[in-house]
Length: 265
Image 1 (cartoon, rainbow, N blue to C red):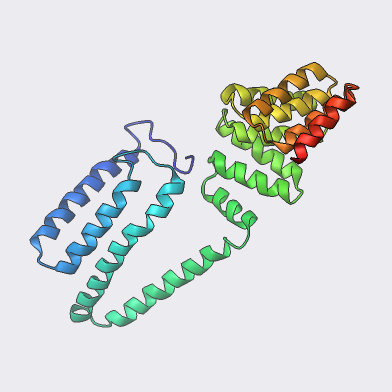
Image 2: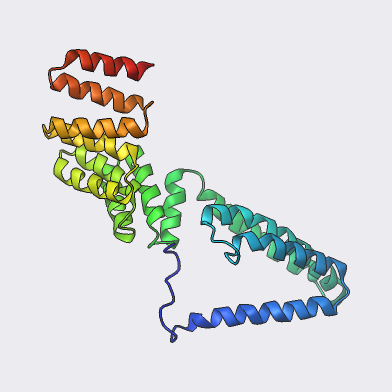
């Protein structure tokens, strides 16, 4: 995902992470079965079973699924922590004060994180500080910046997204729209054709390619692009509207009127 650099060498100390995790799991399992504490077992079982879907051990899942499923393992962790606190009260002096201190730290961290969720811009900007090499974060930030009118910053982030993921068709499509609006039709065309090579069934990119070609005066090529887009998405009012504009430029008023009528259906 670009948040954590890939381990590429045996000299990378992070290769020790896997055996360390395996060791912790084995020791934890041994201790779990040695103890007769029902709450520990319940918490561990709930946490382990709930974690499996997002662990990538059975199937590979994206972070969108993983981040939602990961709420469930925390239930098991809460049970374990509650039991640990109960035991600490019996064996550690001032356990309540320690618990309150930990709770205050957790609340403070939660509050700080919630501040980053106030707006889309704050959220994606905070994500970029953590995941500087994540193409999707750059893409999402580009969308937000474009929506609020900061097209230069949006263009910068779209270019970064494409640099990190050269086949990112949505980033190429959105960047092409910005370039087209700036009058850089040739550059927009290059990006759109690349996006379509990556995803030939991308109806919106076909429509935008048609707009770019139309603005360059290449009407016959634009017509083919619009027809391809409508073939993939027949009910697209936007594409039918642009097709009508093209027919008008081609001095075909009846076809233009028909396209515009279809756009309103």
